[in-house]
Length: 186
Image 1 (cartoon, rainbow, N blue to C red):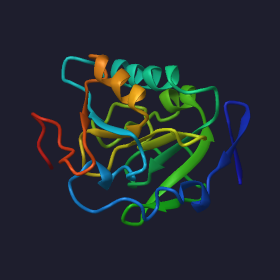
Image 2: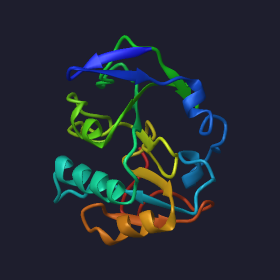
Image 3: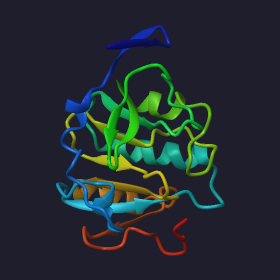
Image 4: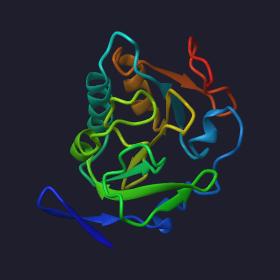
């Protein structure tokens, strides 16, 4: 299926496009609750109070873009009924605990600009709730009830996020609790 926005046609994803995630995460509090255990390294990241949502999200996307060859990105917006999914009438894919996501093939620019109604983490952001490049070299996912974001990918990507003070990332191991220090579970 194709949808139109910004004078272009965009492909809506199917279950096959996220099959590598579906059923490959584990219930619990570790990073593998959001990210399948297929990557070299993992991290959690979140926006600190002294940084705007736009600045934080721009830093995160720039760090990822710098380490990713030019290619489409899959953007997934969790359909909570209260948050912008960009294409409200397009079909959904189901991830994690059968949560409905709108999945669209686009890119980093769209990841930063399409969502206008905010997301559940802090209501002001634009980023999709889950996104990854076509080559699946990394995955960014923020689960429904978390105030942080989980990332899995190559070690250089994770280290770049750790070095960026705005991205505010810390590396975690697959079996480790993903909760960043100083944050609490809802």
